[in-house]
Image (tube, rainbow, N blue to C red):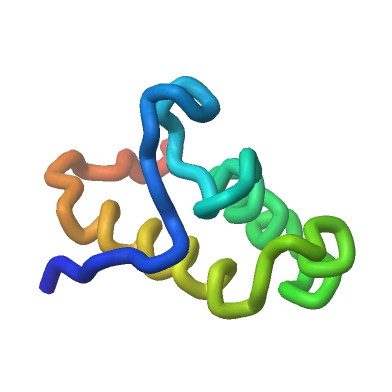
Length: 79
């Protein structure tokens, strides 16, 4: 199921075409890295008040959709 994203855009003239939140220069990847490092959505919203919880949840949905499309196998670490 491919979905339309309301808050995320890719524009070659903004941040070298990397996904950002509309109307900002905040990279989606940066917000995803913050979540991965253990920051809460509330902490991220304090740091980036121009974002909303809905926008952050959409970033997670985008990451999930991109992974669903990915065909490569993630290597399992050596035992």
